Structures are given as C-alpha cells and as structure tokens.
Amino acid sequence: LKQPAGECTPDLYRLLDDLSANLGQGDLRATTRQCFQIHGIMKGDLKTVISSIMNIGSSTVAACGDVSRNVMITPAPFNTPEYNHAREWAKVVAELFRPMTQAFSEIWLDGEKAATVETWKKEVAHMSVDEAMMYDSGRGVILKDANEPLYGDRYLPRKFKVGVTVPGDNSLDIYTNDIGLVVITDDNGELEGFNVMVGGGLGRTHNKENTFARVADHLGFVAKEDTMELLKCILASQRDHGNRDVRANARMKYLVHTLGIDNFRSLVESYFGKKVQPWREMAEWKYSDWMGWWEQGDGKLFYGLHVESGRVKDEGDFRLKTALRVIVDKFNIPFIMSPTQSIIIRDIKPEDKDSIDAILQAHGIKSIEEVDPLNRLAMACPALPLCGLALSEAERRMPEYLERIRAVIDKMGLGEEEIMVRMTGCPNGCARPYMAELAFVGDGPKSYQVWLGGSPVLTRTAYPFMSKMKIDDLETTLEPILAMFKEQRQEFEAFGDFCHRVGADAIEGYVSKATIAA
Image (cartoon, rainbow, N blue to C red; front, side, top):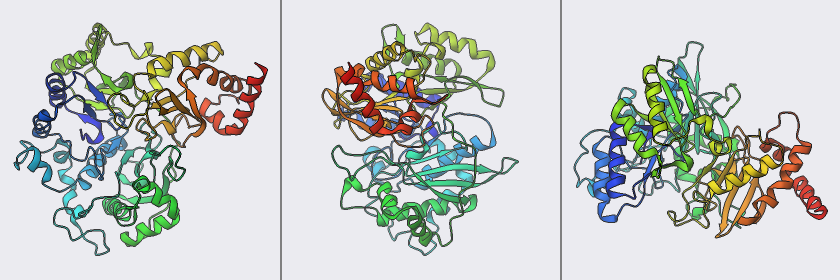
C-alpha cells in the first residue's frame, strides 16, 4: 500500500484484515517503509482488492515503480510543533510527487473516480500542493507532458525514496533516502524550513563493485516557502541526469556519488535559480524504536507494539492479527506503521490503557519488557518463498539466528549488550542491512555475507567482513569477533562503533590468530 507518514485509519485496517482473510493468505506484512503488504492474492482478485483500497481513501499508486515511493517519517505521534510539521510535510511530499496518469483508475476502477479522496490529500488541501507542483519557473523543471509534468513520459530512471523527521530522531534510517528532510523550527515551534540531505540508497549487486550502499550527503537548508520547488528541482536533476543506460546504477545515489555533493548542489541550483543555504546545526542523532507506552503530549497515549519481522498473523496461542482487530473495533483508534516493521497504536485514552494491555496479553502477545533486545532491534525481509529475488531465507531464519546469537552473547559474558542485527535474502537491502551493526546478506541457499560496523544511530554504512558464511558457522564466526570486542572495546563503546573504529583488517587478524590458537 501507499501510506504516507505510515498512517493507517481504523477503517483501512478493518478492510485489510478482511481482504487478507478472504482473498489473501490470512496474514498481513508490516514493511520497512511504513506500509502494509497483503500476500497470497490470486490474480483474479486483484481488481477487487485494489479497488476496495482505493474506495476507502487509501491507495496502492506509487507503492512501486520508478516514481517517488511511500514517504517515510519518524513514527512517534507526539503532539508537538516539530512532529506535527513532519507529519504534514510527509503528506505534502506524497502529493507533490504523486503520478498524475489516469491509467491506474482506468485499469482498476473502470475509469471511475474513487469513492473518496485519499485521506492525506484532504489533510494537506490547505497547502496548495497542486499549484506548487504545476508552477513553472521556466528552468526546465516542468516538462511539456500533459499527463506527467514532473515525471515525463519515461518517469524516473529508478525508484525514488523520501523521508521526513525532526532533529535528533533517526528512527527511520533518514540517511538511506534519495531525499531526507529534517524539520527546522524557531524557538516558538514555527516552521522555518528544512535541512535537506540527498543521495542515500542501499541496493547493490553481489560481485559488482560499481554497485554499493551509500548514505546521503548534506545538501543544505531550504526555507519553507521554497521547499516544494527545491524538491521538484532535486527530482528533475535525477530525472534528466540519472543513469538510464544501466539500471543497476540508476538510483540518484550514483549521480550524487559521481558528481560529488558540491557539483550536484550546483546542478540542483541551476534548476532552482538560487543558492541552497548552508546546513543548519541541530541536535545529534539518536535511535529509538518508540516501543512500549508513551505520552503523546495531548493527554492521550500511544503504544509501540513489537511485531516480529513485521508478520501480523494468528498462529496457535499467538493471535496478533485478531488482537489488532479487537482493539480497532472496540476503540476505533488509528495505527502508525513503524520503519522497523512494527505498529504504533495511537490516540489511546489513559483510561483504556489497562484494557489494551489485557487484550494483548489475552491474545498471547508479549509486553515490550518481555521482548529480547536483540529481537526488538532486528529486522528481516520476507525473502523465500515470497520474493522472487531472494537467494536465501531471511524472515523464516531470523528467529533461529537471534536465538543462536543470544546464546553466543551470553556465553561471552556480554548479556547486557544491545546489538542491531538485520538480515536479507539478497543484496537489494530492503531490511536496510548495510546500516546495522551486524548484518547477514543472503548470497546462496545456505550462506550469507557478513557485514559489520554500522552505527547504532544509523548514520553510516557497515562494511563487508566475510564474503560467504555457511549457515551452520554462525557461532564459530561470531565468537572470536565478540571476544575481541570484549577485550579491546572502549568504555561504553557499542559493538558497531567498535567494529568501525578497529576496521576489518584488525578483526580479521584477531580472528585468524584465535582460529590458529584453537
């Protein structure tokens, strides 16, 4: 689905719950881009599924394709000026970069209009997004294309991802996006503009060194009144200058890498007609998954519900899918999808807190205090059997791997450590493995690449440490690395920071000596 800012209304969840039960494989999948997937739909039922979603005020337009994808955001629903600005602008960007073609409605709605306008479109109607989209400065941003004035008849060279957050809150992997926006306000909470970053992206191909994961560069600051135009100029730069010859190198990260951030900034400014202002200083980044109970700031509460690998299902005594439906039907409250495949239940009245806890407990869902920190920080993509690109297991293997990693950590006397572990079944990076402290990237039916050294606050990429680890070699691989970490770490140093500081060669040397000694 397309769910800007990760928002899921009660009516939408009821619909998805029913569709997955009646026309899917019986479960839902919370993704790493803050939206739901329904798996197992027969082709003959696609029209019913898609039209139902469209007619309830949601959409699947731009959930895939060479256009701007679902716009991500920090999922914390705090009622503060900064967080409110972030939510609003995520929806603004979704509208600004929406595909304009009528082909979608012609195919899935028989050319008719949807029964209701998308919920986010109504919420930003006062922002005059259409007027800003169609504004033509005469500098080549707007094309002479009746259907797609921004995208043109060829759309973009490759998919395009945007994220929005507030200073200090990197719960969404902001540096992995083509464009990252950080809200900048004055002392009274009034929006001044945004710090803008460009050129992030994680997809790569095994054994092709000209494909790589990359974190975004800081482009600069833009005032709020110029933001939509600057965003259009960045998109136009990629549209007109991105690599259309080699699809593996078509993401904007390669254009930014090739030109360098200064030359890319100059390219954007040639469309923009003015200089991009310098990046504004702001709070240091922190990572939080926003799980557990929190006060929203408006007298209500929200609850971050951990979902293992995003799979919303009923299985034996574990009945998460039913629990969520009970909560929606009883309290009629919305959800926000988390960037880490979990779900935030928002707008909870304080007097309903105990009732919601009781519903979750009665349906076999652990409290957040009962969830192992390894599991809480972990992510895995669906991989086999659901993804045609998968080379190995991820979602189905991750629980076993986390148990084995926990056993090794405890054996090494490091039980208090919280290490971010991610796993994918191929190198495309949907679960953002290259940002994790420890990652396993599938390269065959029974093996993984091992990556080390990502930041616990998600500001740099990891590095490849081992090109092929057989699935049974997890313990023998990790034990000497953790031994070195325990022996040589600095005070309060996180595992990812340690691996980054000492580097692959030092770890490899230590592991080799440990292997010989053994």
